[in-house]
Image (cartoon, rainbow over all chains, first blue to last red; front, side, top):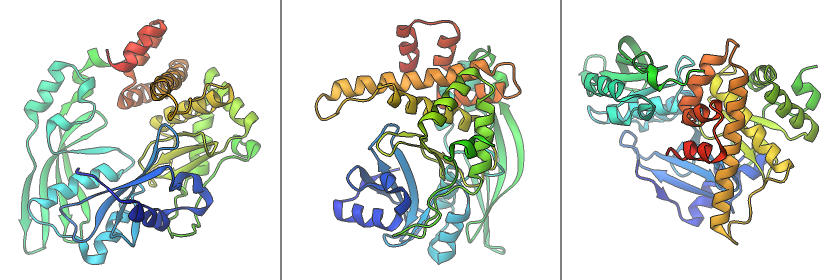
Amino acid sequence: MLWQRLDRENTLKTIDSVKSASEAALFSPTTSEVQRARLSFYEGVDLYKLTNFASLPSFTFEYLGDGTFFQHLDGTELPIYTTNDKGRLSLNDRSVVDYLDFFFSHVMMDDEETYFIHNAHDMPLLDSLDEESVEAITGNHKPPVVQYDAGYDKYTVEADLYSDGLLIRATIEVTASGRVSVLNRRMIVNALALSPGSGIMV
Amino acid sequence: MTDKETSGLGGTFGSKTKGSQIGYGHPYAPQILEEILSILAESKIGQTLINVHKMYKFPIQIIKGTGESGFSAPAKIIYLQIPGSVKKAEAKYIISTAKALREAEQEIIGFTAPDPTKDFMKYASVMHAKNLDSVVYACKVVKELTNTSHSQDLLDALKGFGYSDVYKAYISNASEKELFDAYEGK
């Protein structure tokens, strides 16, 4: 993600659009900065990150926005779907993979933190696994495969997901309006079971 | 009375905003907070942290989001960021709360950060020490909850945070230097 820091005027404008009056300290313009990153699957909508450096850990909030209207990314799919319904989503064979990467990193589905594995070397927890497990995972990982169904105007993506210690091959459906459904899951590697040496057993 | 009622410090915030229509308040904040505090209270250290929280009355606000949680020293508020779809106290939020409660306690006992504009190196050094201290407190809580049904989830969550080396060092009675080495990933 290539982040660009906003100038002071646009920073203040953004903070004014997203701030909560009841919790002004979290949105203090003097201790906050706003960054923006382009997203390949939206036209005219960017990802905004507000960081308040007044304390450590610094508090961050992310939004989808067009500079005037903002949707707070709250861990549910609703802000993403609301943005999609404004007609700004533009999916193709390449951007649909970026979209899924973004979606899974901002939405907790079925109360489970699930990571979309675009590149096995970016997998969370990789550092905490032993060499054997890392090799098993990277050796079993396959890049996402995209198919487009013109009849239903939807994409089907075969991709690896990581959730709860398991590397899973999943079939994911993405409609033209960006609705995401995981159709089936097949376990490839139980990373935690492979890695007893790296466990933190009492 | 629940902990929340006793202290009057829990709950949602920002459901109505001025300047934006964004509601940051978490829809399940009361029940999540009650559950977190109840699980923490099963540990002696956790109960002590809760007692300090009650005595000094710093609020705990649960907001929707996926960003960092912690104690805001300027606002004197603990902010927990939890995805809006989450309805229960998951292990990672129990650890975040224990850590944030200790961060608040640091403020109370005077373990505070110096002015970064005067001596940034000293500031950075103190901030690392404060963070390690709060991570160790989270490890103490996890250790004390070893024989409970929450144990494995808490250990997995510690690993997810990248604190497993500090935990291993802590349970093997490591020295302060060894803990710091573990914290730095040496």
